[in-house]
Structures are given as structure tokens and as C-alpha cells.
Image (tube, rainbow, N blue to C red; front, top):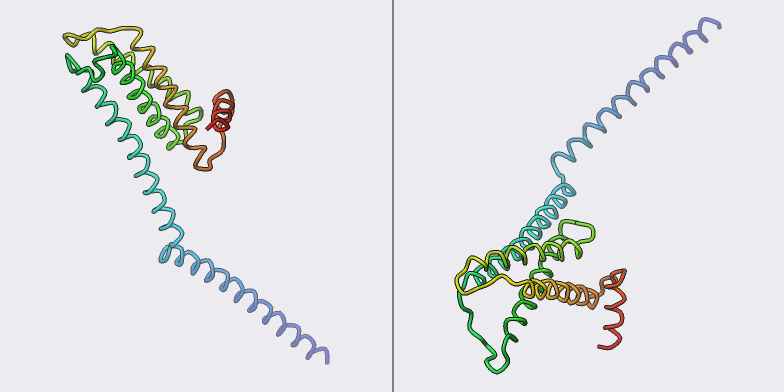
Length: 194
């Protein structure tokens, strides 16, 4: 009887070790299969890669738009004499031109900076537009028939500020969150009037 109990115990031990071995083999095979599935059929990786490529394209488009607009401003500044579109009112076209082109530039820079996740992108866009305005005025000082004036630079900065206000207001109309601070309060008040 003792002999049969010992035999049964050793048989149970063998079975237990076989089960342990099989369990570790199953674990190993499962991890290998999971690894192969993620390598052979990485749908999530492909989806992530597609969105990454789309984000890169969007970033390139945003910066390209800003650089093309800067090139347009440079070409306009290189002209010795621009036509007066409002002959009855002196300087109206010049002031309107400064406000418009620098407002659009500031909005494009804000769009590009937001696309790459820069914090305080509106302030950075305003600063970069002002710096570009300074470089544009210096450039104009070398063009025959054009002069460098602080008033033009002031209109550039005012135009940039107005362009940023308009861009943020348009963004808020699309359902985006209202910006904070002074700009947010101004936009909320403007939206009540409009």
C-alpha cells in the first residue's frame, strides 16, 4: 500500500511538472505570436504613421503659406514706386496696405506656430511680424524712391495686432474655445456687437 501511494505521488509530481512546462511553452508561444502579429499586421502603427505624415504636411503647408506671404511683402517693398489706388485721399492705400499685409502675415504666423504647438503663439506671431516689419523698413531704405519711417513700422504692428484679433475671432466662430486675457475679453465684447 505504501508502495502504491509513493507511485501515485511521483506520478502526480510528473504531471504537475509537465503542466508547468506546457504553461511556460504556451506563454512563450503567446508572446511570440503577439510579437509577430504586431510586426506582420501593424494596423495601429500604420494609422499612427499616416496621421504623423498628415501632421507634417499640415506643418509644411502652414509655414509655406507664411514664407510665401513674406516673399510677397519683400517683392512689394523692392518696388521703387507703388501706384496710388486712392488718388483723392493721400496715404489711404499706403496705410491700408500696411495694415492688410501685416495683418495677414501675423495671422499666418500664428497659424503656423499653433500647428507646431508653440505656447503663446499669438504673442510670438506679433513679435515675429514686428521684427519682419523692422527688416522690411530697413530693406526699403536701400530701395531708390522708398524711405524707412517709424510710422510705417507702427502701422505694421497695428495691422499685425488687428490681424491676430480677426484670426482668433474667426477661430472662435468655428466653435473653438475663447482665448483668455485681454484679447478674449475684447473678442467676447465684439461678438455681442456683431
